[in-house]
Amino acid sequence: INNASTMDSKAKQYTKLEKKYLAQQAAAEEEILEVEAKAQQAEKDIEEAKNEISDMMSVKSEQRAVQREVRKKMVQEKRGKSPAGQRRARRAALKAEKAAKQAEEAEQAEQAEQTEGADETSEETAEETAEEADAGEAVEEEGAAEQAGDEATEEPAAESAQV
Image (cartoon, rainbow, N blue to C red; front, top):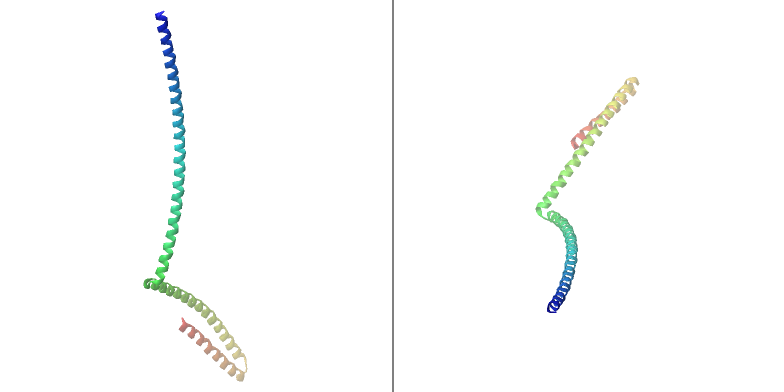
């Protein structure tokens, strides 16, 4: 009877310990699941934070680019107001003027060459008509041809003086 009661009490103790162990194991599994869920949430939070940081960095880089542009404009404005900037602007304007004058002179030279060629042909035709005409008419036409020749020589001389 003694042995049976000890075995009975031992069996009860064993079932109690087994229940206790199973309860502890279930609680541990629940804790593990909670920790895993928290870890996943933390990973999501980290990703969101990374995205926010990258968004903020892109906004900052855009702001910096805008600031650079504003600074460039301010520097350009200051350059125009300072004496050195005014000198630069004058030099640039003079260079542009010189280039325009050179282009204009080249154009005038081309026109002068074309008009000289036309004047020479008109002088030759005037001389031919003078030879064919009467003696009295020949004198008048030669005078006209000489006058036309004087005008033709004056125009290229005036144009070359302009150049």
